[in-house]
Amino acid sequence: MAEQMDTGSAGYEPRLKRLYRDVVRPNMREKFKYTNDMQIPALDKVVINMGVGEAVADSKKLQAAIRDLTAIAGQKPVATIARTSIAGFKIRENMAIGCKVTLRRAHMYEFIDRLVTIALPRVKDFRGLNGKSFDGKGNFAMGLKEHIVFPEINYDQIDQVWGMDIIVCTTAQTDAEARNLLQEFSFPFRN
Picture 1 (cartoon, one colour):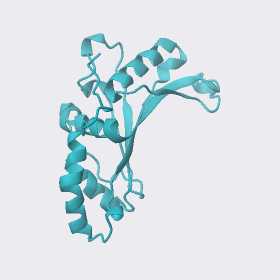
Picture 2 (tube, one colour):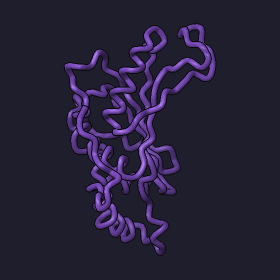
Picture 3 (tube, helix red, strand yellow):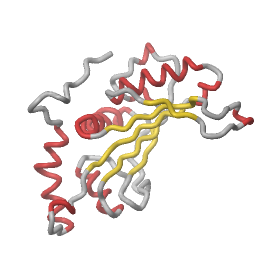
Picture 4 (cartoon, helix red, strand yellow):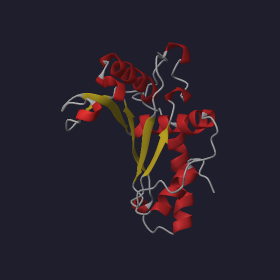
């Protein structure tokens, strides 16, 4: 596994956090005419979810997904469990069927940096992110069909390719503010 970043050391600050402080905040203040610094939207957290339906038949698939998501996120995910039984899918209540991880602070900024600069350009036939994927409260959701676009995943060592959902939560009150915030962080939205 790749060497993990040291986010606990004194003086360490992710590149995107500096960008937010030095460039994004002044731009947002000027564009939306905020009167108070606390009104300026910021990134709150990033939630990454990986559904592993094959875990019903083989629990080793879930362990492989957890290993891959740990490499991508830089912290250990938790297994998600089924709330109810679904006979058609052979799922029983409390069965592990996926994994998720919530990133905050330095891990969040590092993940977004790798997502925007490395992973999204590696997606096949990528034409930009859908600008309508906001929830009305300033949160943005997107999906990736292949987790192998991240550089932490060694293509030769994986047994299966999984998709993942990525939700970027912000403190913005409206979708327009959130979209502008994410554009400042170089999120490639379609026009």
